[in-house]
Image 1 (cartoon, rainbow, N blue to C red):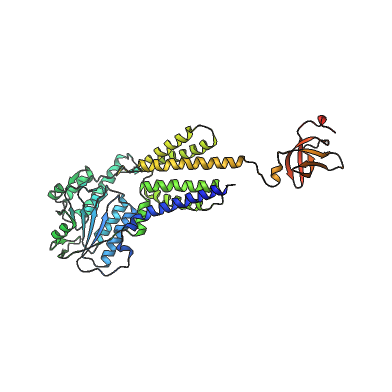
Image 2: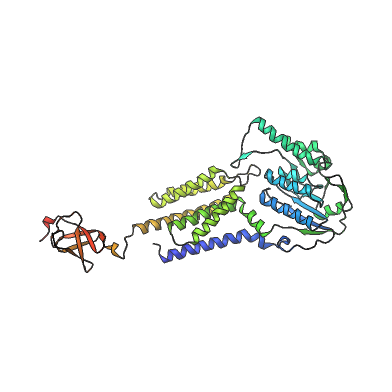
Length: 464
């Protein structure tokens, strides 16, 4: 049984954690208004729809880009501008974006922006797929060799398979780069030799079309420019008075994108485990179980998209086991400290993308591991203490109590009686022996209205 103060404390902790995480997940959505959340309106003339690739390319980001391009086509925009700053991403998501760009009826411009940005790996493929490819000063692109990874770690594959992957990626790049009138041979070296290029090298090598310092500068240079579409047709861009409309992620896309971030995934995983643990150790509270279940489902969604290292996952499970053992055995904190170290190491190893080297930050790992350790150890000790407490109400409180025999117990035809807690109770001997009047006995169990007793001292030494 859990006391009312402990129950209230646990309720407060669960609600506070839920509110905090909900706010953290939606903070980006609340900080800015998104035109995508509002009803679609007729796009004015010379409207430029602006999309952003500013993180790893994964399914949620791909959905956002695809939806933005399709909406721009439905509203008959003049141009689609995609700014790029990415280390790369998943091949499937990259191909989904490129397929939508190639099929777009509205001209698409890809632009590595701002200064210091990069279009590496999958971002390089996307950059060269557009009608116009541009870069801002002090940016780079390339290093697009395919990487095969399992469990978030690069793996060596058979030489023949490696050639197949490399050749297929090169052929895919050539299939549209040549049609865009760009230097396909030089672009292919970014795949075959993992070469990278500065914006000037890319322009001199005829892989991009121009260099611009800002989106406004880019649109000014594009105004009146004639471009060749993928099907060979030509279009002259009229951008004398462009109106930029930024298509941000919807609240749903922002939320899902937030979930697949390594720090958020780790917090969801631990929050889910903690919620279910609290529910199992303190049944009937419901809120921890509901919150924990939802958090675990969201963590499984993120796990499906992220390169999870199962060594890190095993270290986190080991940490949970050590916390429980710390509560059960007097190890003076040895197991607890070991659990904290194990959880921090597991968090740092949990997500390790071969594209970026990014994962759970040390601050998040430490900030989650310490409170989790304290909560688990304290809750487990409360549970163990409650199990050790003797029930203080009902018949069960009589078990183990000593009392005195008032009528002999075990005598044929006579009901034995004992006096306990100011009451007379019918009694029977545990092993069928006769216990005389005045003997001290101990209650072994309660059977209906009869106490099963055993003598504290031998019957021979008792007074008759």
